[in-house]
Length: 81
Image (cartoon, rainbow, N blue to C red; front, side):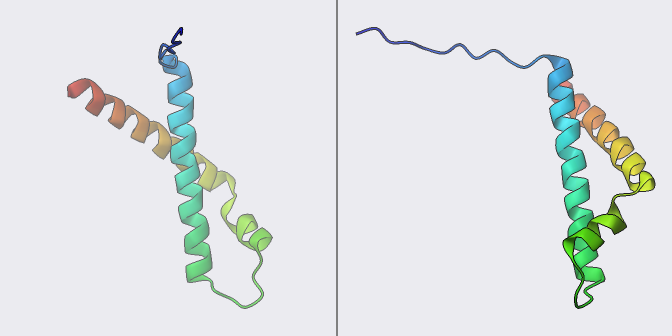
């Protein structure tokens, strides 16, 4: 019997950065969405109304800046240890 083993090949640094930054942005927007439903718990508020409130250019810029800072911080911690 032949046994096949897969060799793990790590992602390229660019792809890893895109994945990590995308995940941080996802967490940012999911946190905003949860806050929108907890803070503004109006009867009859729909998901589209909440998305309209949180998807703005200002939030998009904040999400990208914080994701970049988070990525740089985690990379620094990875290289330090």
